[in-house]
Image (cartoon, rainbow, N blue to C red):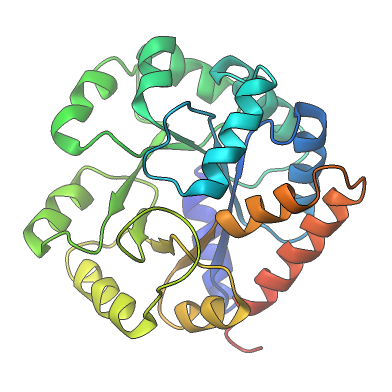
Length: 267
């Protein structure tokens, strides 16, 4: 069963957009992380993007950098993330995407990563610092093609390269909404829509937009054209603001419900 393809098709039929939520695995601690992720999944999240903590997350802003630091301090590594994914899969059937830099995957072993990810119920992976030209080192060790390889398209990617990247992707494409790192501010929906249409001209894969989306207004504006909306820093900011709050899972669940409402085109 291709969970990623299925969710995009099902959500489109309901005149909605796919809500993709990123959180760093093990932040603020493994038990709380599992609890809040389960609450997010039961509150309307369509796809879970589970971040693998990394010591040098160069594409991420300060909020996600600090989330990685907290998780690493708690001893979270790729092996523990896969253990978490296994537990999450027992409670939900929504797609799980692993978000990582290449170093942890390379150190773990690319073939072992592929097999263990599938065993854990993972549906896809996004390696943020591994361009198509260098991906063969990883994918040549994979024993099949059941793990979707999500690709990033940046605001400065020319059309010819959009096509090259798209041709090597599966699952969906992640269109970066702005230059710089993850975080708030600086979104121009009209410019993002233009980039979306450029990308749509060279691929039939679903296209999700992320980086810096945090407000209801932004979600509604981008939902008018995108197939999916990716929210990460806003969720991690909620975690950081409620590190000692026992109601954190409930807070996260409520926020997911609000964002999901914003993805409904008829609302």
